[in-house]
Amino acid sequence: MQAINFYSLIFYGFSALVLVSALNILLTKNVLYAAFSLLVSLFGVAALYVLMGADFIGIAQIMIYIGGILVLMIFGVMLTTKLKGEPILTQNRNVLSSLLVGTGLSTFLGLIFSQFEWANRPWIDQTALAEGSIRKLGIATMTDFLLPFELIAIMLLVALVAGTYLAKK
Amino acid sequence: MIPISHILILSAILFAIGLMIILMKKNAIVVLMGVELILNAANLNMVAFSQYDPSLKGQMFSMFVMVIAVSEIAIALAIVFKLYHHLRTVDIDFN
Image (cartoon, rainbow over all chains, first blue to last red; front, side, top):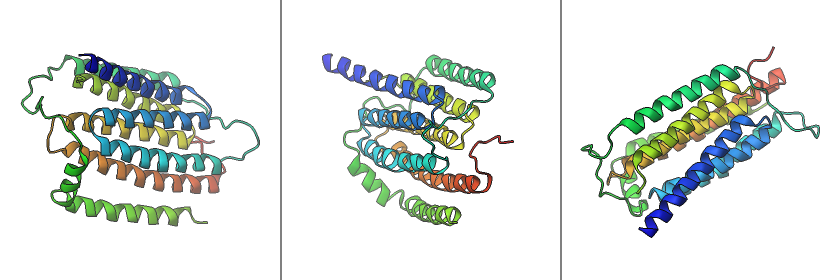
């Protein structure tokens, strides 16, 4: 019982971290602060993956998002502004309508998810808790998902070549 | 174990925040950050459902979503660089 309480405490703590730092991206005007809030938010999502038993996805999240995408984004911020020692700011537009859309959508989806009866669906197997997903994921990648895996490798190669071609002078 | 509706509500709020960032911000790179948040919300849903699935298909899907996010961000940042090169700004509704 004590362990379960500790687990849910950590889980809700990381959930609050994710939501607060995502809201900070929305509220701040400084682009670099937004980038670092995105770092905290992605790290919190990685922690949630690990807590849900998806250890490989958590590690991949840290390596791909924080190690790759975020560094690329910070380089993008640096390269697309004239650095003059001032903070890099962004303006807001459509503030009222987008706040209306966002709060409306989240309350609508939240009402649906909280009203729906999840516990006795036939496809929810309450006992199947994944323990150590790396072995299963590796076997699935090389057997059932071999064709999508190769296709997405080719797509990644094409996307990177296209990105380099587009970005060249 | 956390009830699945809480994880779904968390990812719905994350999706709504990402949508608000896309609608609200003027800087194209911050808009791309909103797209990343939306993809993360989708991944969170799939990993949450794969808790109850011994074959782990949800985690495979979230791996593919991550690769697609990387490709998208590489192409989009290249386009943003080109935009800056031509227009000297990365604001979306420039005048």
